[in-house]
Figure 1 (cartoon, rainbow, N blue to C red):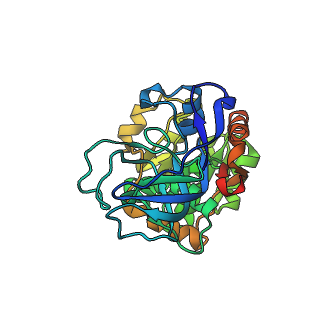
Figure 2 (figure 1 turned 90 degrees about the vertical axis):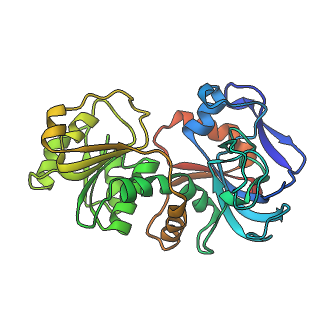
Figure 3 (figure 1 turned 30 degrees about the vertical axis):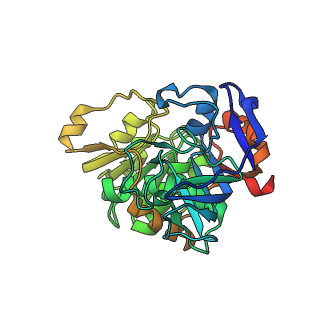
Length: 346
């Protein structure tokens, strides 16, 4: 098979397009013919640069922390999946062979594409316990992006913030991946009233196209003043932020109303932010950080995407051999939508 291999840390050119033996599924594993794998700014690009030493990356490595495709082989003991099933897999998983339900896993685990071979390959083996079936109406490219971002956004808004229909939610980074997905979950799944926020008019208005009720460009508008105007002085119920911009978040925080909730799963714009503690205790605000997702939410996300309630932003679909160029594009444009690599294109 063809695969992208990192044998040394460095610039995009260290991503080598190589011939490797097909992986063979071990006990409790399935083998997926990959049709899509997303390129991620931290878990792929920063890992390739050698800027994620804390993750214990071991070289050589096939990167790619997610994949979507079709099962073409199953290992011993696998009965829940069959050849031809459309599936998606991502994230942390057992590192040693185990039963298909994972009940006898050794406890050693790590992310695919970091601790075990990832999705930047024509074929990849993963534990059967971490795979999720895909609705027929959902394409592989879209499914890979949904798997990467939607469950995190769903967890933050539905489970952690407990956002309710009719409540006001302020979505920061409206044109980003987590922001754009958050807008759609809040509006089309939950039925909340959504204010999209970004640092330019174009990016803020992108939130309107996704269903937001209002859009604020904090580059030219007073963020807090606009929120208070829109909400008749009450402020928002939920602040959804995954950036921690120290110049913007303090004002967004002051736009939270009585018993407001701030939720986050990221801080790449910070991480240190000054907040108004008087506002915190006076308004009885709750702050919750919660990375990751709940497995039970993933099928709900796939179903919502298949029904058209969530539309992911895909900027480019590229051949696997173009991985170095995909990395260069990601480094050059921090605001672009997702890049998806499709190994079936070469």
